[in-house]
Image 1 (cartoon, rainbow over the protein chains, first blue to last red):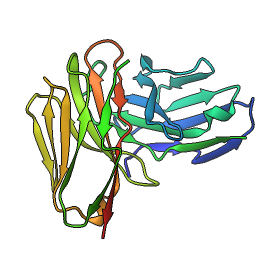
Image 2 (cartoon, helix red, strand yellow; image 1 turned 180 degrees about the vertical axis):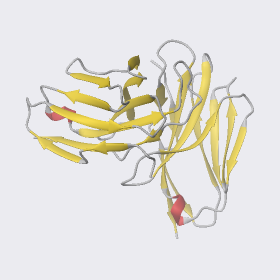
Image 3 (cartoon, rainbow over the protein chains, first blue to last red; image 1 turned 120 degrees about the vertical axis):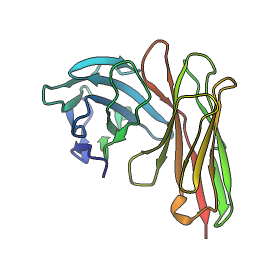
Image 4 (tube, one colour; image 1 turned 180 degrees about the horizontal axis):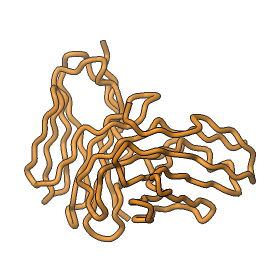
Length: 116
Length: 113
């Protein structure tokens, strides 16, 4: 158990809908990362938050947004869902301070999103 | 676009044999190289984070080396056991531009009992 929690574990929804994925980092970790794992693709970085502020952005679609709250939990919002958004979404946390990559990341169990 | 490549894509190894695989990354603007182990139906778990050229790290039967000048890292597993079956991911962190980990697509290792 990494100490990172994600809810829900599974989500099935229809095209055009909006969903929210939730992540609680390990106690004390200020950095939260979101990744997407699609079929036959590697882990794709979406976005990072550090202590409530956006720190780095990957190829995140405009239909997707995220935020980190004062209690450090984070939410990833996916809207106008398309079939191609079906994927495993991971949240990870680390003790990484802003601007360094020398801290390992701890991954949550993931949320499996299926868009029908 | 940063290219992180891993080879081979998949590997079958007899139990008890040793094996190794490669991660290639850009040799410029290097900051850190991560290795993660990802078992089926679980989430990736960190093995090593390496930051210095020539670094060698070891955890039990698994070890890794790093060459930042030529842009590669090797992961070695000695005396493979069935529980070593997993996908091994490497990820590169650059000190230039967007501060993010770029993952390779992994080497899927299967140990044959």
